[in-house]
Image (tube, rainbow, N blue to C red):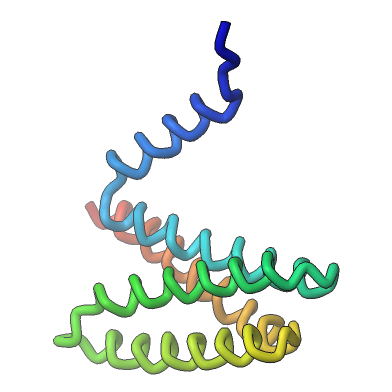
Length: 129
């Protein structure tokens, strides 16, 4: 008798939510992921788990690069976001090289603010519909 992985149904549910999510919800998932991975990297550095810190920083960078690629540069806001994303990538690179959490602690409020602003924009957008 084969044992079932208890995470199989969770992973399937999570995968289904990704496939059925709107563009706005997918962006929210990315912002949530950024917050999660920055926090994980800070904790990993504190606990001297260098490989886990590297992986969390790398995942955060991947998310930022994905968000950066989807910007519509016809809007002035996108130009500002591109500069902010570049700054975040620079800080993540610094944190990954030095394994010093100060750079991560510096960007965490920015990442949280981006997520919270996006969440607020989603709420306002739904009210207008």
